[in-house]
Image 1 (tube, rainbow, N blue to C red):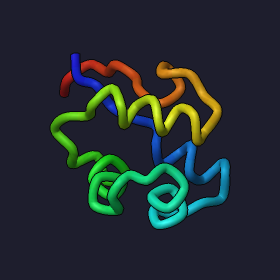
Image 2: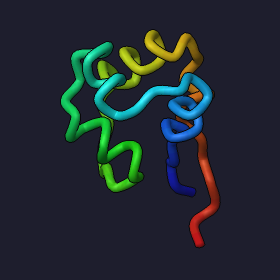
Image 3: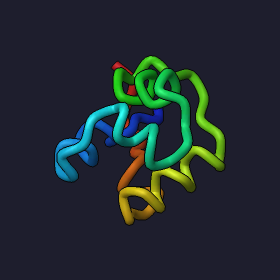
Length: 69
């Protein structure tokens, strides 16, 4: 199993870009970009919490488990 994120989907629903999320959450643009492009290898609880607050969502709305290919 591998953990994937729905950041791209959440951003599209809210109509925001990487810079908007960075400005609103205080997270670095680089961190948001890595998550958006699914090139991030780790994510801290603080980042998860900030994104969930910003998108008014639960952790399972942001992260999901998928079978590895």
